[in-house]
Image (spheres, rainbow, N blue to C red):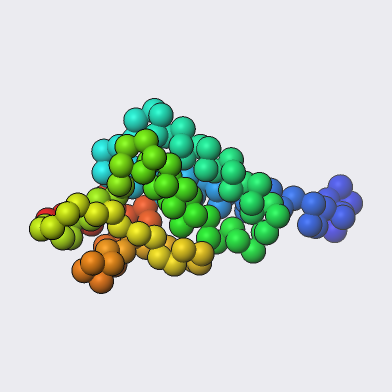
Length: 133
């Protein structure tokens, strides 16, 4: 065993955390770009969420797998206050425009879901490939 690295186990939890945060950021940014709302101030909303969730996941490391869904919901909530509903449902061509929701709210493998149609539209990060009406 390399003596220089002895005792390092458990002292570097930062790498998976940073990877998870980076992945969540990338997925949500991909959805913002796909729906053409990735202006600089919107990107800052993503950064704010990632900073907030970094603290959250440091308190609860088991939650790292839930970051993408949480960041997506944070950004969705922030956008609602500033811009309105996002992302608008691409499935329902009629009726009032409505936003997709993230499911599960706290769990792995988050998806954008339309509750009106009862369908999964895309994984978080996958809106660019979602069918549009």
